[in-house]
Length: 201
Length: 233
Image 1 (cartoon, helix red, strand yellow):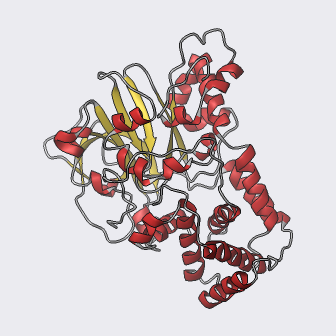
Image 2 (tube, chains in turn brown, red; image 1 turned 45 degrees about the horizontal axis):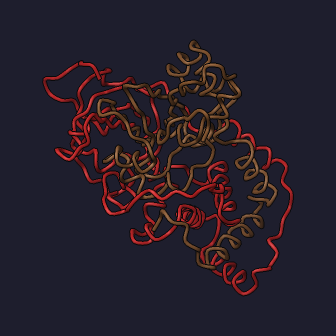
Image 3 (tube, chains in turn yellow, purple; image 1 turned 135 degrees about the vertical axis):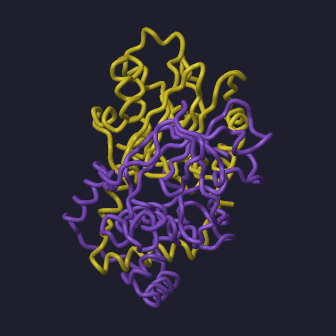
């Protein structure tokens, strides 16, 4: 099943080594490139970037307006952009009336510049098949129950546009600094499958 | 193509299983696959649409029986061979060498220029930008109906959204048409829209209440709805 991380055949490991060594032979790859690129995604490009965007939007209403009007430009103001396939970033805002969820039913498009590499569940057949058909049931599995009157908007990332959710600011967080707020914002909340909790669980 | 990758609305995959404290990679080979794919695109050996379509072509049963990075591996190796970068026999022979001797050294050389180029892509991106032409045919709020077609090649019109009515929610700009670009037929840039669909339109009476699905669709996927023009999207 694509959603599981089954132990791959040893063949996979040998095949990947073979490809790597052939590309190195042909001057198209070095192990240093593999290490440095991976390190960047493990350490520097991740949900902490998106969390800074959300926290800024919570404390600065004018920034939030810019973010919702032109996500790419507003996110670039904080220094984030880059590879993720996508050309354009769109931020969608959760409110008591509207809840947004991001999915890619055709493959696994995901806003890398602000969220980093996607978790396995986001790429799983279960999430990709069900998020568009029965979002309330999927949200319930994530522990999110929405009022019946809340409209759910699903964003199926079928092109080079990437979506991130601006979750609702939790009640009781009024006194927190921007940095403290950013620490509360989770990856799942920016995909739209979680609320932001305060105090953090 | 009507492949199993086109998952929207399918049944039978069970609950969404999550892993606590999930690492970004579960094995070193996954890291190598991710970076080799970036190289394939940065070096313009293939484009992202060819990459996605090579996953779709990997075999329907195998797609469901393999992990995400195994999909990437299938696509990267298929394309490197098809584009003539690596010989099929050469790849098989080298794979047998590593099977016989997993400790065989990779060989290596530093390549500062490649490293700098890759890091620039990671930081700044390499996506194709929106193009100025052609002008969009549809207006915001306009009712449209998606084509009901069954293209055997690559497309980004999901199966669950074919032959359905929606409204233009936003105009994103003019972008390369994946249906052409995945098959060596050029860029064929077209206006790209966000189209909003009521869940009831897509799923009928089983739809959950108060739900809309927004899908990014190229202009040639859409036709006007006769007798309807603007209304709030």
